[in-house]
Length: 371
Image (cartoon, rainbow, N blue to C red; front, top):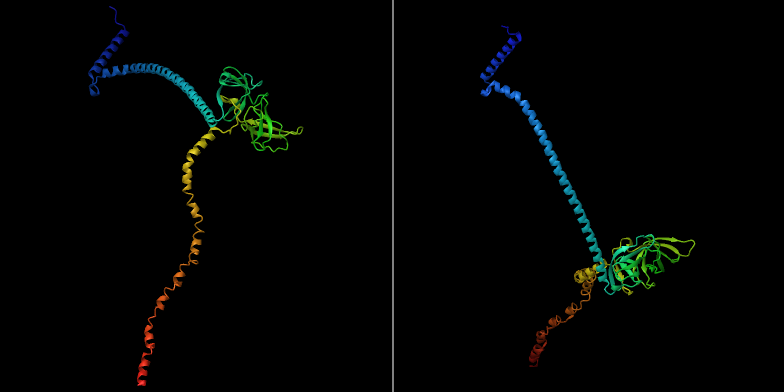
């Protein structure tokens, strides 16, 4: 028979040792009655469990982060769309508020000048090339009573004149156009001259003598000589004055009173009747002043008396005091009244001495003498 090899015997020896160790591990108990073999088994398997748990947690966290970022992006897009919608809404509300303010100003201006026939119109278009001409298209035409060469204004001042009329619309030539002009005068010296457009934002006042005193900031008003605008409507203000060496007239630049580059609503003057130009704000201030005028008058009248007597109180007090004391005639008549004298004069009772004065005794004495 063949003898077992050495390696086989070593293997059997190792197996026997392992079996003995396992048996010992099964029999030996550690703290809390836990078998040693169970501890070894748990310690050998726990690294695999921890690795598996870490891998699962990483995959789960990555997935959750991706899903969360996806939702965050959706929320961000939604918020961006809401912000854009709110901005548009805000712009729309601001535009409507500005339009309401402008329309309120036009209405107030028209109510402040009820004696003049005016027609409100909306600017619906403008010339495509402002460098060639300055015109706007308004929403009123011949069917509304608009005629050529009628004046167009705003609550701020003169805008221009009606250049062409159509059934439902009209073209308005602005003051800044090269072919436009208006009869004007200086608010201070009342010197007259035409205001012409130059195609630029500034106007030019012509034919004002070098001897005329003109200062920057002086108001320019309509003169009424052009038979388009009534007299004393605001045209603009003087911005620059320069003498011309080659001309007897001054070079005067004028800033338009009306905002011609941002027209949205205008007023068409249906008549050339003159009126006192005043803005809606002035009118409202006057209305408020008129409403509040009666009470303040009464209230001021009440306090006015106190200051009046308080001021003259000085003079009247000394004057009456001095007058009654020295010139008090009733005090003199009292002592001068001889009422007290008649009392002492009453000693007419000295009739008693008259009795002794009576020569009764002497008569009595004479009687014996005669005897």
